[in-house]
Length: 137
Image 1 (cartoon, rainbow, N blue to C red):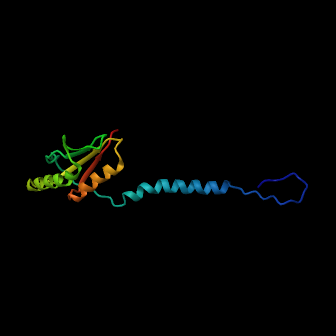
Image 2 (image 1 turned 45 degrees about the vertical axis):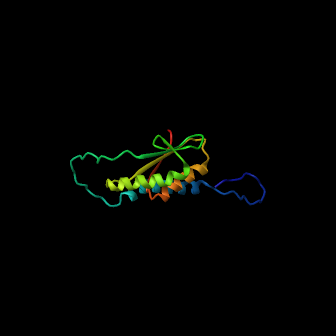
């Protein structure tokens, strides 16, 4: 408590925040200690197996949009209205080979967002569910 040396009878109305800070620090420490324990709540001993080589997968189909807005599938330029039909054809070929078609979308950073959104919508309408958007580091 703060003591005043004044002779006046005024009420000293200061809030002592030290207990509040102490309580908050204790709560912070409790949360820091208990948070990692909550993520692994079920202890499981996983079985050991031999290493297996990953299944060989076909290279993904790359859809690119350059700075001028031109569309490419792999390195072949196509018209924007033909993107969906070409992707559907590629999907059917992949299903015939019992593979799932994977598509990577990369666009120049100067391309209008609307063009990228139209390409993503065409990929979705083609029924492709595996889409990766490629960016630079």
